[in-house]
Amino acid sequence: MILETCIVGPLGVNCYIVGDEKTREAMVIDPGGDAREILDVLRREQLKVVAIVATHAHFDHLFALEELRAATRAPFVLHADEAPMLAGASLGARLFGFVFGQPAPAERLVREGDEVRVGALTFRVLHTPGHSPGGMCLLRDRIVFVGDTLFQGGIGRTDLPGGDYGTLMRSIRDKLLTLPDDTIVYPGHGDPTTIGEEKQLNPFLQPLRTGVWYV
Image: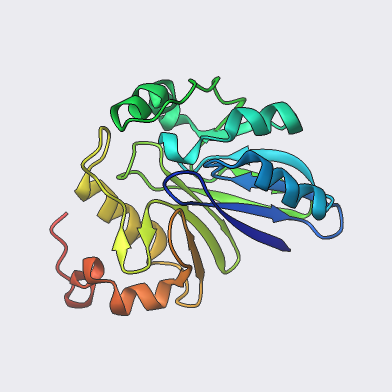
């Protein structure tokens, strides 16, 4: 599997380029800006994009979406429950002082258990609401792309429209912390981590160790 990380856009989003070494098909996860940099990686690796995926529809994860769509003609994939958030992405950007053209609707809406296929690679959709209503993760074997659901030493913020702390904690508990400890976590911002490391060291998750969850 080919995996390239580009830290892009004004808010430092981790954009992941995931490709099949044999077929050279690829998907772009969270195109948060700097479309030329992303396209340069695709050209260098001789990859054909078959899907552009957003783990959620906050504007900082979408800055390069339309430019990539135009350049690759690949479909945009989003969780079905996130479609209303996408519709308000431009307004959300303005509230934070950014100018951002409103993206077109996603060509493909997915739900829990659906699959995104890239050549011979298959990624399963995990619906992980809380940071946003349609937040999702993509899981393959011992690798999971989590967007802004979970970070090294942190969790996604829940004070934005559509966010809910209890929902986020249930998503992390039920969908992510049930994965094997050696599962590598690729977040939307910051460094990769593992499920085991976060169980032990993430201060937001320590109630798990006592079995007390107030959510």
